[in-house]
Length: 234
Image (cartoon, rainbow, N blue to C red):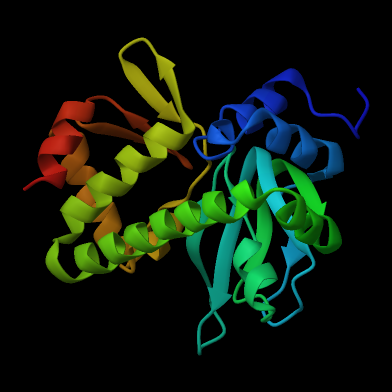
């Protein structure tokens, strides 16, 4: 396989992405024409907090782990960027350094737009300004939702919501079950929720007793979305 060309499934992930798919055909074509394909092994570092921003990136396969380092020196995961999602535009707009570390989670394929090409796309397609404004408004709403959940919802509710989100983004249906394709340890889940691994483990055992999920090593299987939704809404 030519490593500089997207596979059919990778291209489909990009073209059916919820944001990208709503752009006009001329803009989508211009973006793809300027993009280069980059394939990364699991754990490969993409960018480091504090360095200048030089690229706008779309995820075609795998995931990008966005993280920071705590005062104690511990790496803390903040989110995972899924296939079909574009990121990196904020630092290109304001000219400030990257705010977090980014690395590949699993084998990952990216579409990369260099800063000069990103600027030229904005110049040629005023539509892109409005599209990125809508994208960042959505990010801001999601961030406010997460802050609200952190301050108002119990851990079980937040964990159920997170598992449902992961199932929507990375779920692979197997009959009535949905296996989450993203490999996550319980420590990774705990970091996403701002909780301890022990507490997350306790809640997951409760979910198993209720028949909502099955916990496998580094994998979660959703047995009942309805039961998870009921836990999330408690």
